Amino acid sequence: MGKLNKFILMLFLSGLLAFQSCRDENENKSAPTFAFKDQMMSGKIDDVTWTKQDGIVEANTVGQASVLNFAFFTTQPGGSACQVAFPIKGAHVSFLVVGVKGLYAITDPDPYKSNGAPSVTITTASGPTLIAKRGAVEILAISNTTVSGRIDAYADDQNFVNGNFEVLICR
Image 1 (cartoon, rainbow, N blue to C red):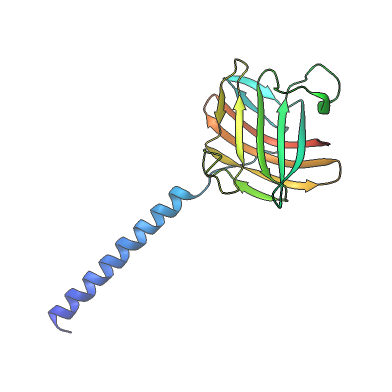
Image 2: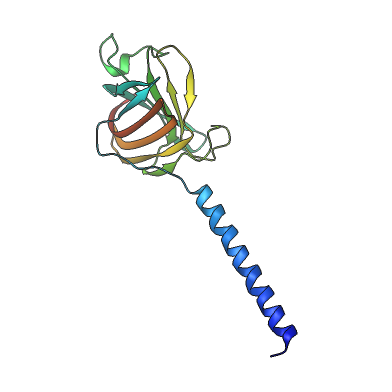
């Protein structure tokens, strides 16, 4: 093989290797990061330990799509979870997700750009609302009366939740 052919072959292989390396880096950067814990939904809100004690979900139709709107909170005065007055007082977690069983990665912290990904918000006791930057929501079962699933949502080191949930559908 001539020197020119060897040089062209080496140049081609170097370019292929560089292209492959860039592709791997891009895939790793866009891969969602989450790890569900087998526990009751809990975490920290405003760097204070938080555990879901109650929750609700409202099933709505937007256009032709079924949408589930969740809210999780500590015990609220006023009877059953479906009688909770909005806005919810105190630290709470809420999210909106497509009403179909499945795994939904939090891919974009802007709910208007999420293309079907869940928009998870964590509201602190003092009022600021943070949007989760990474994680996932998995809807495991939907019946006529309840929805069950799991969540791993992270806004920052002081605001995150992880674990299982089952909530009553409020109509």
